[in-house]
Length: 258
Ligand code: NI
Image 1 (cartoon, rainbow, N blue to C red):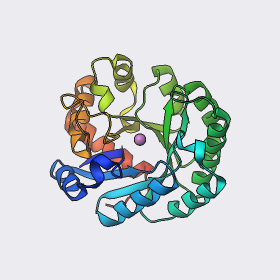
Image 2: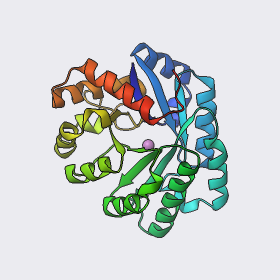
Image 3: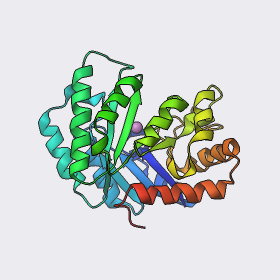
């Protein structure tokens, strides 16, 4: 059974056709999908989607870009949502300095607050970091005692050195469509080095469709293409990768029951 540990089924490009999207990924052998919230409102939507479909779980959290307009009352809503039986993680949370650096301090504050929230609810975290790896590693190390329930670096694009530090902190490394891109040599090198018991797979649908579907609307049905690329890079069979990712998923996201 394949796993998509990070997608956005609430996106306009997918939500109108959800019965079909779900039927397609199930037909492709994808049996576990984690639908990710980016603020309190989208976390409510992914909760409802998870309630409506078997095999679909969700994460509730405030994305670093959405922190800009977020208030503490939004964190209270996330906390309530996170108690839902199908909420398997707090996320996506983290730091993103790519688009806007005017509220870095607020991003850091909400990242730490949500790490805390996850810890208090015995949940792992789903981490989004873009152009902010230095600050992110610093925060994660400073909060290492709050990472007891683990976490995953979504769509990892950092260095091999940093990946090793993150693995030491108990985190998993997730690979998606970008791994298949021609210019992804650095990420491909990382994919060769990560121990097999720390790898996860994702699509980040509807974004970042893997080759040879790059540029199309991505959906969880494309997970086998990510597994195929991991297999080529690592020299393990696709079946071996599929089984390892499945086991890793159940180990990290303890609220998933299959
Ligand atoms: Ni995402």
